[in-house]
Image (cartoon, rainbow, N blue to C red; front, side, top):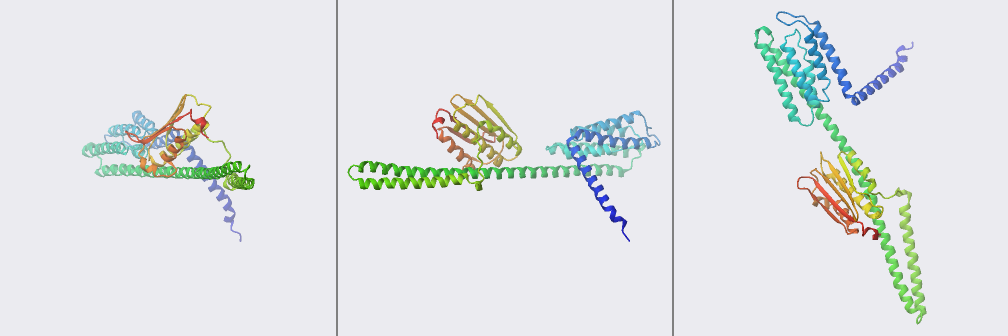
Length: 420
């Protein structure tokens, strides 16, 4: 006998997959349309409230349903629609309408609006948690006071247990909102750390490549310079010996040939390393000050709001000075990402003067001291100073009086053209 349920499994799987896709799409839409989502949610709560209000039966001295009650429910719907865009104002408005609804002595006390507003205040009220809890505490205290008056006044006939219920449910909702806020903050912090770690790893990799290229360049320079020096000495000796001691002059010329061949071999080997595909070296143009937008955008993506201000016209000459200015800004912003802490803002000012390029990078964080930056061999302050000294420029770096860090560099253009 064949189990008929087995044939239903593909249909069930397809149904579950469709439901999951629909839920994912709805979640994505709600995140990008916050106000529209909150309006729909508030209308749903308002509809339930209106149904409960119309269905309730007035007893004793209670006020029968009328348009004023409907108007209060509508006002609560409007207020609750701003639960995420303006949570504290939403709580204040809902509180006023809820108290008015209670004091009007209608036959129902629909408290969903105040409960949801308290949750929204603690979950979405912002980073000033003292202000949030002062507002929530005041709201709960006011609702408790109204409930206590309802117990004290004989005509209200409100049981004492209702006061305990009002306090308990609102405080529980507030704590739940705080838990959601804390979780959201932890997730955001983990995301920032992940982005920062990826950024630092990428910067470290690029810096390692630059350091290796610098080392190879120094080795190449030493090999060529040493070989040329030996060849110059041997050539001078051969010139002096060619007339009187031609045999020794021949030896000197042979030594020049050997030294030149060895230097060329070493130079080809070094250049072969630089061209090797195994090292994945990109043959891209060197960056210039025109590429600072990418550095600033990368800093912003790492969680550091950064502003770029450029004054004057970028000179067409002095490519080396232009690239040095770019590297100084890049390294300074890297230090801001690593050491300034959070929250922090950075500003980059570039001034093109007739005879110099001036860059200034400031932040308002509380990062590493200048001694800690100097301890990073090959990076930070030391690397910046080495670049600046090539152009006989000036570099100032240190903590700012009002907090944060400042790096200021001046790169003369009149010496830049002579630097190779």
